[in-house]
Image 1 (cartoon, rainbow over the protein chains, first blue to last red):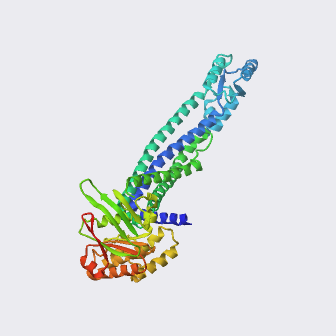
Image 2 (image 1 turned 180 degrees about the vertical axis):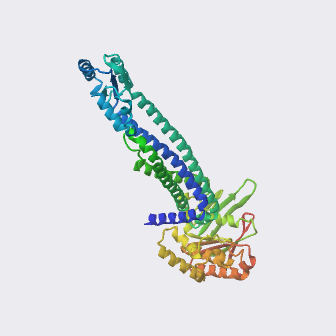
Image 3 (image 1 turned 135 degrees about the vertical axis):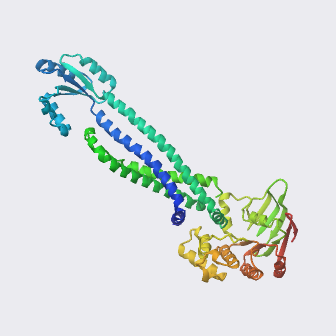
Length: 297
Length: 218
């Protein structure tokens, strides 16, 4: 009960103080919101790219395009040998007609293109899907080397290198995000700490009086810590709100592309949003503790 | 109530604020601490409520060695001592009722009881009818009475007053002294630091004279 009363006092004092110097406090909240927004934006981009990579890596395929008109035993022998390969999980034969169907399903706007050309331009192919655990660049290269000169194989295509490049890009995005976000979060800590220090200076008399009538250190500091907590939490909430708004606007454009990527673009999961708001609160508390540590409270 | 043994206080190397102070103020006593400006009156009071630590020597307050208590116990010590200052030290942004209740608030006393006791304390100094006023809306004498109400709300064993009438005209000063006498009559030990000789003579209480940091009389 006593702790509850103390907490109620801290929140009441903090809200009064926040409102009293609202412009300066808006500055702290804004700084925190911007830094967490940047961090969150990079996280959103990284998690979307990650999703794509995960989807693609689940099914590493090597596609062998076949010479035109290849039928019967040559093709059967190729399929058989691929099936026997220890790295291959399954093999699927795609005929020229099936390839055309796929194209039409994937690119609706270009549906008439094959008709305009007058004939089906797509070659037949054999798609080999790799076993989980063997989707390494080495395996893919070995498989390609083993089969690219095989009779009936016109051309080989594989997407593992792209996946690897994308993974590197994601690591980069995440790294840059963490770095930028980290720097901005430090700026947030600094701003909150300075704004609270100014408040402490402005209210030094009041704090002295509190100590003289027997207030404990915790009791004197409490309202300031709560002030930082509220500032940081508000900053976090605003940044999540801004992220959501920006996401809604940008995602509309990205949706067309997301058909290709295999699923809709996703926003940050709830736990990451909670983490951002909690992170803001932590930044606020650290900021205010820093300023209290340096002042005479 | 207050026992000081060979207390020294130095703020810098050249001069000392207090030198070899040894004195004893008994429980229930009313006494004045006097001397010219810079004699060490304020410093001595600060040592008693642990705003400062002596450079040497020991001070016992209510049998407790305040020079040896850990920082964490200072708030508890201060709650058992009422202190009144020349500049009142009231919270300007709070009403006088809130100012007085504040001492109870930091002890997490329920709000209703805070108000009841703060009202009673203001009534005792004759200011209950102005309880919603802010300190700056009151005269100096009234503000000092609020400060006294605040100092007394916890029924302290000891009341320290540092030049409590320094900013007041003689009439108001007398009013404040009368209040102190009433408090003393209820059993609280009262120590008033002042250089107002006239008032000291009028009151006819024990006088401890300080001069250049030493006990000169009393």
